[in-house]
Amino acid sequence: MPQSAHRLTYFTDSVINQMTLLARRSGAINLASGFPDFNPPDELLAAAERALRAGYNQYAIPWGSTHIRQALAAKQSRWMGLEIDPDAHITVTCGGTEAMLAAMLSVCNPGDRVIVFSPFYETYEPDIAMCGAEPVFVTLHPPQFNFDPAELRRAFQQHPKALILCNPSNPCGKVFTPQELQIIADLAQEFDTLVITDEVYEHIVYPPNFHTYLASLPGMFERTLSCGSLSKTYAITGWRLGYVIASPQLTAGVRKVHDYLTLCAAAPLQEAAATALAFPDSYYHDLQAGYTRRRDIFLQGLQQAGLAFSEPQGAYFVLADISRFGFEDDLSFCTWLVEKTGVAGVPGSSFFHEPIHHYIRLNFAKKDETLFEACRRLAQLA
Image 1 (cartoon, helix red, strand yellow):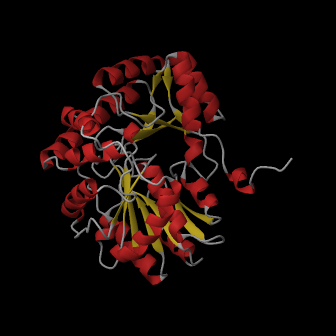
Image 2: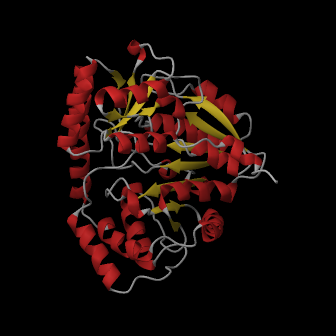
């Protein structure tokens, strides 16, 4: 019988999904998968019900309904400090995951090199494999997860087609500084490289850190494909609404790929999401305050459990150091953790190119009562 495609050799089963299934079977608190356990804003739920009743139940315009693109353009123009054209610059996708894949497939050829900072989100390497491209890894060094500019320059000297930038970073919570972003921008322009950004946590940043959009730097809009998502900002991970913002030339390519990947995102949910995109700035201030509170609750719990960690600057994950427990295999530790405490995390090794096995990733996008209970259970480790 014919065999499966060779590209599948680069794929592994999602460890996040494995741990989520284990949590469900065992009744553990799931801090593995990156979704909140609280509802979206009531106004957004009401808008979804109205959209369903109003007849938005057939195919939308493939690159996004007029309503959502106009709302996205207005919001992102304000936050990015750029003039985003809803017709020329935006492609609405089925989540940020498709946004990243569509962006990569639209610009990467077989044999191209793509720079990836390590640790990285688990879909990037398969995305690169699906393009037939080759990853070039650059290490983010703990505890601050900074990069070495000399190492990054050596990576650019391999003449990559693109660099993937996750900012704020999943899994380590790093927020790249304006100075670091300028180094990346200067090298991208010097070596004529595109940048594909994953900015789904753009509004979840902890003071004094702040988010800077790479595309907003001089000379970078034309060579940046900015990928985003509504999932994290509005607690609607199941709605699968993402987008790519890019120059007209790059957008034309993204739209071609998107058309054949998924055709369009869910029409009624696009209409409803426009309501959220029009929320006032106070919504984002409250979002930041809420996640800052959750982070503080959870980090205090990790301290009481005797778990060392690198304090996240953004996003809603923390990498906890499990060195003191003596496990050589972080997957075995996560399985043991579920059995001992009833809390599920993700082995950190699934995010690193380097042979690192002493971290686990934990998600604190949870209700306060969920976090307090998780902390109570983790206290058994002290």
